[in-house]
Length: 269
Image (cartoon, rainbow, N blue to C red; front, side, top):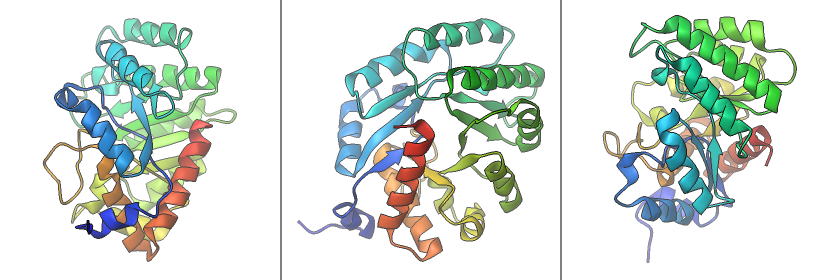
């Protein structure tokens, strides 16, 4: 049966894609979660990392990753959008779980000033505490940085002692901000946004190349063109991969190799 799209055709020659950021445990996937995962496998997306959000998502997260060992990997943390007055209690739950189960990173953490600035101080403290957890457990950080690069950089300057690694998830910054991230020893997560017409990420990628990039979907959010506005899923990681390849004048197989190597190094698999 002939393939209908260049991205689909290229799958046959790929070894393995890694989706470094997907929320498969959310209710958007309840009707067909296993089918979504099977489609990912069929598309060459053989490993997926699932960052926690808050206490309410821990059991669904562990249930799903426990059903697909060696393919789905749990990440433990408190999302900045879930930071409220009770954030210290939430962080204690995070710490308790870190002593009970194996996790592959801390996150997603960070600061989000897009939705609500009410709890900025709490977000800053929550981020700081999770950086310290990452250092204590020698785990990478998955950082959410929506409209908050300056605030995050200030905290990293104070807290990054020793060998701390990680990903700035759903990167939408400038070339200069990307360079600062690389200087901290972090990589940038690129997903469906790079396929959006006016994202500006094409210019950033053209300057930085793929050596500091990992791929992600952030599914069910941020679906790439041609699925923009619909539910995203890990199989769609092929579209940002192809877009990056086009920007850099490379084969998608090389983007797969570089980004997979980067992800394996960060998560120490």
